[in-house]
Image (cartoon, rainbow, N blue to C red; front, side, top):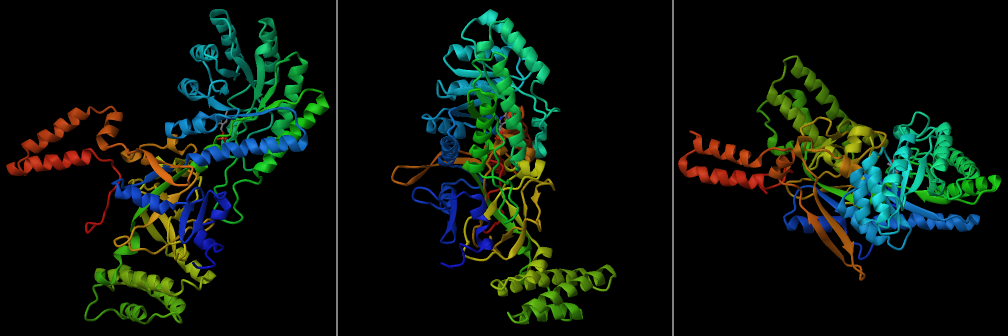
Length: 622
Ligand SMILES: *Cc1c(COP(=O)(O)O)cnc(C)c1O
């Protein structure tokens, strides 16, 4: 193995920055740093041998469980360090990932912890009731109608430890009405507070005075009056805030905690004797960056937990109240790393420029002839110079074409020769990276056509410009030479991850007609699945769960194949029987189809309808 490969950032794609040791580079491939350390490319090839072509969505339940345990470990550690007497509990916010392949194993793996679920809608509340470990916390946020509050009462009757967080006074009034209708047990009541501290970043609307949610100071006082009047003060158990997702700085959280801590103390003074918990919401950030100096957050989990515990202790002491139970609703932090999208590269744009496609004439324009000579005689010594010359000649030749001096064949030869020279030069200079070469490279990017839909699998890239760590699954002992832009297979021009000089991506020059090349997109386990859209009718990719046995061996299980075309159309409320009937009729009535062909054509079309819409191959020689 190349001894520099572990430290060479060009070959490891910043894995030491973003992977938290969940994935490692070894022997030129990305491996899962767990159990027998299988490589992602080995798992991918196994699945492809079993017929699952197209993109794969791989889940690693051990990583979600690990993240929850890290959260508990660090809060317990910080509590000990500061002598904090309050408890720590947490819930997973379902809106971040409601898929059974994620939620069910998560609940199984965290039974021994004070860990539950957070619901923000009726559907999520039903999920929480069905899958939460009984007795572990359920919190309910978001706008609620009478029906949703009734479901909360029923959950309490079923023995769930449920807290309904009030977003406005009207919800408290609804609860009061339900008490007289449904009696006890009454769910615990939480109050979402409207902070004067603003939220941050692109999700800022979650916090602050202009927030969609939460009670103002006046409304808090009003809520206390109402609770007292209806003998429900003892049900008030939690106050809650959420300042936004992916907090890149910790200072707004610190401000919010000071504010919330003081509100907690004031409410207790006003008689809320069972108010025990402060729920600090989610927002704990994930490191998505794969480039030095471009970190997505300025704090660690140690710092985060220390700050929360320290501040709450300080406020409790100053105000002479008991130290509150700390609740968190971290979603992204728990879910993001558990899933990896593996997508095959289908084509490199410059692949069409091969020596075969040259159509040199008996007599070529002098500059074309010169390009050809450069191509024939390029060597390590002159590569840099020849590269410059080639690019200069290309500009001149393109101008000559615009002025009508050379023809289309000359222009085609120019394009092909320049690409061939670039390829050869990069090959020759592979181990001599210099700024100058990088600059040239960055101008002549390679476009990689990748078998996935950005809208389905990375919607936050499209919607918010959120970037995700991406790297090839193998060849990591070789220095990548091409500055890459990634094209998905939708026919939408937004379906592109353009080359960005501030966060450059370099990939290998491969001949995908001869060898396979797979890209892994990491940390796609939070929000992406449910926000993903079926633009161009591309569905959720084929998914699989990778689980590990005690002895370290792994299993590929719970394979869920991407929906086939007819099922997608059915989801869009098409009558698929009608679609089949129309197609059959057209085949039967067509004048251009011979009688003996009809059955075969129908059969072939049916086959396509029963497959998913991702591309299987675009090379006919495969
Ligand atoms: C979305 C949301 C969360 C989760 O936020 P993350 O940034 O994913 O941790 C937690 N609580 C509430 C109320 C939310 O709306």
